[in-house]
Image 1 (tube, one colour):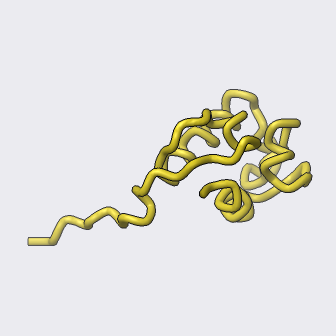
Image 2 (cartoon, one colour):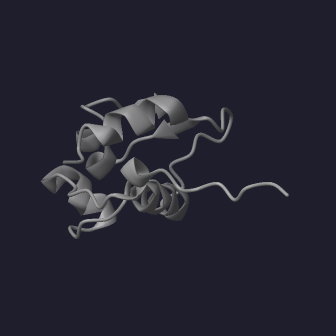
Length: 87
């Protein structure tokens, strides 16, 4: 019988978003997984995913601050940039 995978504690630890990130996901502490879910919900709600290249995210003003001033980032770069805003 396969052993059930234990969630990684580092991912589950509540993190505090920076002021810029709080504009997008809210100010309360939450695990990284939850932050990622909320960012994706925000991206979909505001139709910020590039229509031609679905891996690219077009930042609006709130996300541009989180993305270090970049107006376009790919999914993988986004996670890296978002992690800088978690303490």
